[in-house]
Length: 297
Image (cartoon, rainbow, N blue to C red; front, side, top):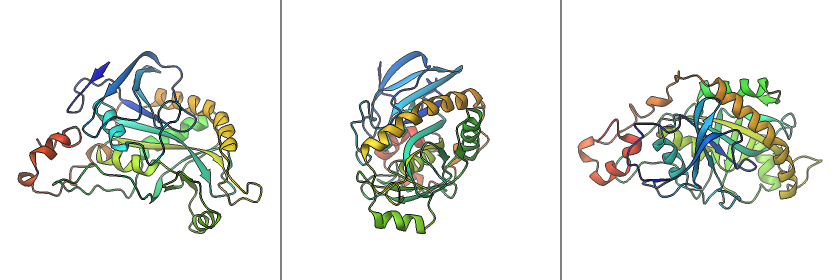
């Protein structure tokens, strides 16, 4: 199925979006599935989006790095990914990703539901705005508190050890940290390190979507005395162990997902658009219609 929507879906194909990262390339248990290839104003998303029914709810699954893990963190078209989910009618995004631990008590195999981010990326676009339209969204609380509580509760329900909050530092990659960087991140009190989530979170907020992050801990970065270096083989082994737990948690979270949002994510742009509407170029309005359509036309 191919579609080229220009504004957010009037008849949603999904209400919950799941973005799967390293180790999670599909969603088990989806029924009535359909592959949707969407052309967004920002280009193509990472992969065809699989829509279907999970625990009685319409869900859209997107493999962040593409099937077969073909796309580097820096190469991901984050704007297209978030916009495509918005166009399908998604209101909540659950992000699942692999991270390294920066603290002894955050062990490989455990999950962390991030509530804060630090952005150390360098080479990626992290806003929908510009080209004649300025917007400044609130980002003090970068994840949705309602969705984050649900994700942590779902981990507990499934018997997965979870840390209910923590700071995720997002580096550019694709190389892992140097030892000096790892020590610096630890001295600053950060909890886990990854390469993708902060960019998604910023764009989800601009798109007025709830965003919650399940960070699957795979390793101790390179700082731990018993883990002096991080290798791809080590991470893949732990990823495989985490993947089954993630599937159970996602099913439980979707099952327990309330119908209505009780957060402010859905009105993030209400007071964020700064530019005089009369001065916004028509081309910019058209390109951003999926994001700003209810405010500017």
